[in-house]
Length: 63
Image (tube, rainbow, N blue to C red):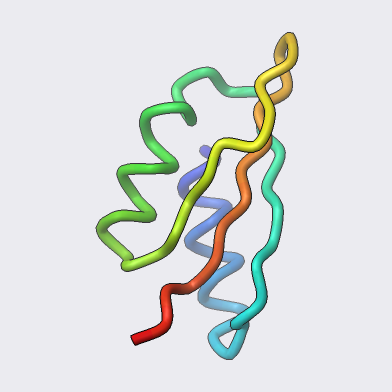
């Protein structure tokens, strides 16, 4: 589900250049979000993993 929500957010904000944070609780996101970001040419950094909260910073890569 986190990848679907991220994909929808990106579609609704196509001009987004700044970094944004995404918080999830699905442990599968540790694998899925970075893989999706790599496919979409997005820069993804794991910022925090505390308990059930996982926080990523995501940014469109500039050419």
